[in-house]
Image (cartoon, rainbow, N blue to C red; front, side, top):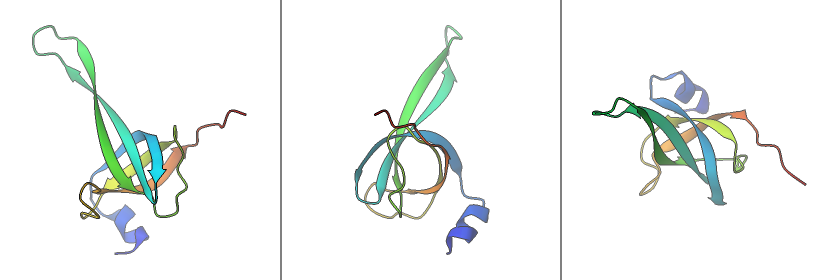
Amino acid sequence: MTEQNMSESSARTIKGRVISNKMDKTIIVEVVRKVKHELYGKYIKRFSKMVAHDEKNVCHVGDLVVIQQSRPLSKTKRWMLVEILQKEEVQP
C-alpha cells in the first residue's frame, strides 16, 4: 500500500508529542488523554507511549505529530508517521 493510500484509509489516527528519536527510523510518541475519575468526577491525564515508524528520520524530540495505525512492523511497532503538525524550535 502506498503512502497516499495509507492516509486516505479509515485506519485509526492520533496526535502526540515525540519523546524519543534515538532509534533508526523509529520514534516514540506520547499520547495524552483525559479520563474522568469514577468517584470524584475530576479529569485526570493518562499517558500512552506508542512506537511509530519514521521512514525518513525527520522527527525530533518535542515535535507534534499525527500517527496512524498500521500492520505490525516489528515486535512493538504498530504505528506509522503521517505528518508533522508542529516542529519544536531548536534552542542554541
